[in-house]
Length: 95
Length: 291
Image 1 (spheres, chains in turn green, blue):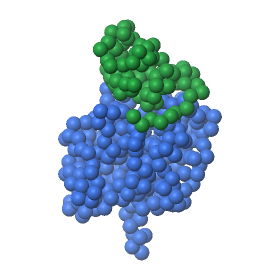
Image 2 (cartoon, rainbow over the protein chains, first blue to last red):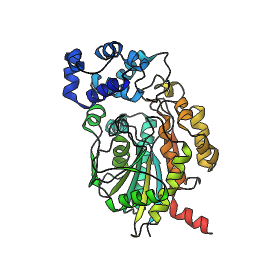
Image 3 (cartoon, rainbow over the protein chains, first blue to last red):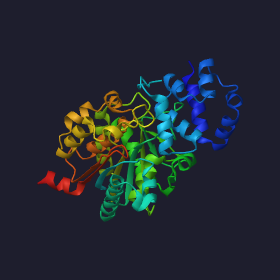
Image 4 (cartoon, rainbow over the protein chains, first blue to last red):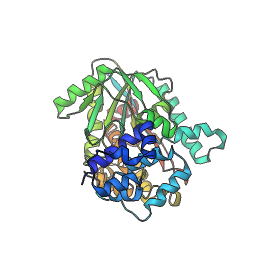
């Protein structure tokens, strides 16, 4: 499992507004060449917060990534974000 | 000999500057939170510090899994931040102050002699963990800062006892610095929260959870030995995925020998995770010990 590559891609997208825009326009192109499993690539390409959480991405890395894609902090964002994590629990976060 | 004149514990929630922007429209509990920052800003100014030692976790902004220091001292020319993406996502303001390199290097060198292998960086950006409290507490940006980064997010994380001992050691090392400096320690952390995790909105149902109530009671009574012993990463994570950020308050407890604070205000509401404000006048603490 390439949790590091998954988390690193999310980290970069969080930090770079222009990269985030390219990712939202064409996720496959931005993810091309990264050493990801098919499951990770799909979860990332779909910005599937629930799947990424279940793959073991740290909640804070996930939160920042989702915030970037949403354009910034707002209460509606929080509700939408938490809606995707319903029923999950935080597991072992050691990498 | 230098002197630690104040030890403060404050929150760093990046949505708090937005509360200030809301002005009179902001919810009452959040206005109280801002009011506690105002009180501590005046208190810090009255203590006339020459240097601010700021201790905070980083939130995967400066440090990532490619390089994750447990305890690290910043010794660049400036103590500046936060990152552009934090400013874009939360609307937090920049902070840019001088860095007190002489004290930073003193802590790094004397730490190594004592068995504390700090990492260091000459090229870093302070994230909101530092800049939010600094902007509230010293908006003039006129005092030199020494940043100490602690890893409270990416396990393995040292147990609370290590944070406590580090706080005690930092005070001893500051007091051994030959210059006659007045130093204030600002510990940036929080009580329970689960930012980014499924329980993130738990405070809306239960603003004051049992862990927060018990922890606050122990701190304000100065009954901290068991609290420090129980504050390990795994136990805190079980309270909420961000709660290990409390370890930076444990650092502050070590800096004051576990004594009771003379200022303690907690705000728990359905509007935000609980915030805790603590302060110790360490000049009177020492007088009390000597008496």
